[in-house]
Image (cartoon, rainbow, N blue to C red; front, side):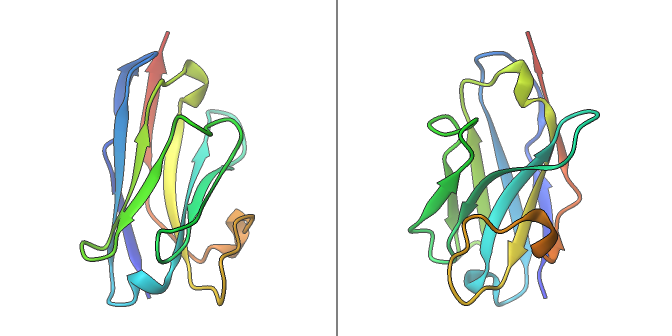
Length: 126
């Protein structure tokens, strides 16, 4: 099993940047595809980005493509979400999630990720 802990959220002005980290426990982290999701206030949880266990393939939601590069360091059991050019509509609680899959499933839905962090709040002011 994998336990996930996010960090790096906060308050930032529009146009600014934040870097989220998701630290994982467990020796099998490197075999998990990882995803970031977010839940804006009053809305449902939505997909942001996913990355293969090797870190060589990524898949982004259109809303963040080109602004939120994802990366992972399996030696540190950590996945990162660099958030650039932030907009007020990026305000949300951000969650990282993990799933052990036979192959990369970029459109894997939230309900199919068995492991989740507690979430970190990101607030973008206008």
